[in-house]
Length: 327
View 1: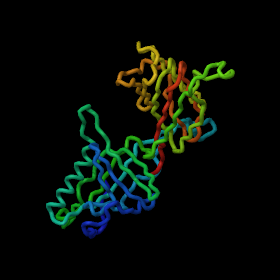
View 2 (view 1 turned 90 degrees about the vertical axis):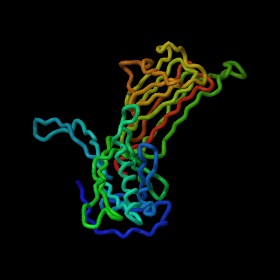
View 3 (view 1 turned 45 degrees about the vertical axis):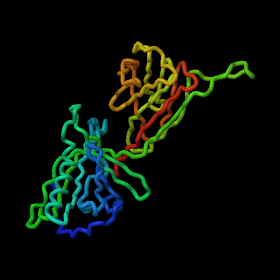
View 4 (view 1 turned 60 degrees about the vertical axis):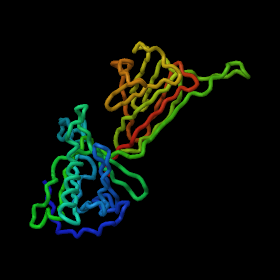
């Protein structure tokens, strides 16, 4: 358990910076930070006027993920790497909390403790909801990571601490070690207006292929996109030509029949989920066991969207957030 050993830090006067003050973070440089608890409440972490702020010198765990290796011994010595598995990360985030008097300090201390430990409480659906730690840059970009409180909201335990101020070194555990770009990447493909073959001259309009395109994943890790398909369509096939993986979705397998104009299906790849617009589970429409709800590898991915039975209004929308090793 990390212990804050820094000397007493005099709190700034109330009414200080209101928009967040950049702090120096190890390996990051100047940035502002915030925490969003499971209720959606945003807690600034680099805004001293809030009554607490980050002790930047004690922050750790913002760098590249830790990996475990699966290896095969080689006959002539050494080993060959077969697989590298990213491990959960732990972020240490020291906070200094203060108040103008003891009661104000205690109120702030309790509120922050609840905001972080709430990640361990089960909701009505029986699941625990993580908080979100966000690091923002001066250029407006930001990266986030989901966190669960582990330990550290204890105070320094030194003489005089806990009266009108105290410090805590929070250990925040991350299921997924990668940082996610707050800005989504979106791709839209839509069928054009169909034409008469002989009017005004011989013309071919595709009723199957919406587009073969290259999608760039600018991140450091595989991303798992969400797809929204808008009808009409009788059979939907998405192929990642770079990896050879694909999946097809046949609406008739659900008893619904072809997808009508304007009807939508949403396909999530992590965790796997297929939902019709009314929330009905359409996972049975996938071409199991061949179906692979593929992700996008870092770099360029050659992708084909194919909708059999498409027409005016048929569309495919893809969305993902790049994932990075560091904040």
